[in-house]
Every structure is written in structure tokens, then in C-alpha cells.
Image 1 (tube, rainbow, N blue to C red):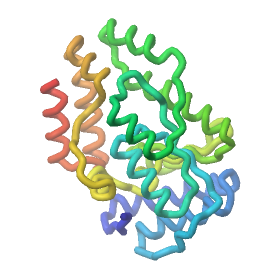
Image 2 (image 1 turned 135 degrees about the vertical axis):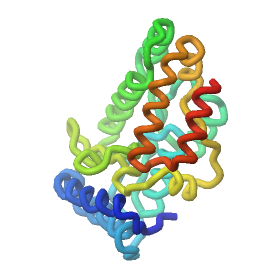
Image 3 (image 1 turned 90 degrees about the horizontal axis):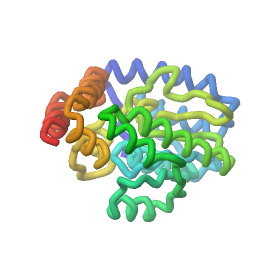
Image 4 (image 1 turned 90 degrees about the vertical axis):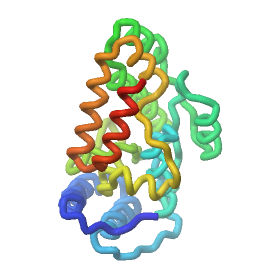
Length: 244
């Protein structure tokens, strides 16, 4: 499952993330605080810890992709009471929905999603930022309804003070970034995985407005500079984007 790291950049980020954890200690409670701290110390020092079930409940923004799947698996392995929450989107295939159901995820609707995406695609405008914000608004709303204080995401880049922070009554935990995990480590955790970039709606946008591919490539390069992706993975993903 999870392994310690000797990478100096990751270790620096992990130490910084511990500072962020201290800031939300009161908001998340001692049980969640202690277990999350133990996870970071395991990454830093290889120090084993008790993984018996804890009463700390964490909602996971679960898309069934690699990053959110690894987030779900690690949190369960660490003993958290995990509630996957999935935004039901029109581009989801049956295979994805089957995986979502197999994890007993709570499905939520995203009001106005399809109309908003269609309008942007017809204009040849970027969709990823708007998609993300609409999905997260719906998932955050459901987490609050469920009374869950922590919402974990599969974000790999938001380290330091934005790896875990308070937002409108809940605490956002960008879990792979919080543990300084890269894509290679994530794939080792979840098992065989085919790298690809985006979703069917994004691929439709690429066909309609090929110039938007540059934004995807910029995202890949940003993740590579942050060492979330290896150069080999970056090349594979950029090839995937360019061939769409």
C-alpha cells in the first residue's frame, strides 16, 4: 500500500503539510488529526501505526479515476470511515458507473451541468475549470448534508497550506498532495492502469476547437514540473492529447 519516501522534495512538502494539518486540528477533531499525522510520519519515517477503524469520517470526491481511487483505498487502509461521493455526469460510461456502485458511493446530481458544458463546447471554450467547480460545489454540498467534516479530493498539486484547509464549514483534504504522492506511486497502489487524459466531453472539445489542446498540455507540463508525473508519463499523456 503506502511506502515511505526519501525524495528530498517530497519530504520538504510533507513537513510543510504537517504545518497545514495543525491549522485544522480543532476543526477535524483529535481522532482524524492523529491518524492523518501518523500517515504523514509514515511517509517521512516509515513509522508504523495502528490502523484499527476510527470514528473519523471522511467523504471522498470519487470520480473512479486513478487519483480518487488511490485516495479511497489509502483512507480505508488507514482505518477511516470513508463515504465516497460521486457527481453523476452524462459522460460517465457504464464501466465507471459499475465501479462507483461497487464502492457504495453516494451519487449526486450537478444542476445545470450538461447545459453549461454544451454551451462552452459550442463556443470552443475551455471546460475543465468550470466542470471542476460545478462538481466540487455539488460534492461539498452533499458532504455538508451528510454531516461529514472532512472532504478528500484526488488533487496531486495542492501542497503546503492548501493541502488541507477549512472552507465554509468543512475541511478540504487534497489527499495525494497531502501525502506527496506522485502518479507512479498512485498506480502502484491501485494496480494496472492505462494512462489517458481527459474525458469524452473534453475529447469532443478537442475535435471542435483543437487549439484548446494547448491548455491540456500546459496542465501536463505543470504536473511534470511539480514531479507529480515522470517525464515518460508526460510524453505518453501529451501524445494522447495530440492524437485526440
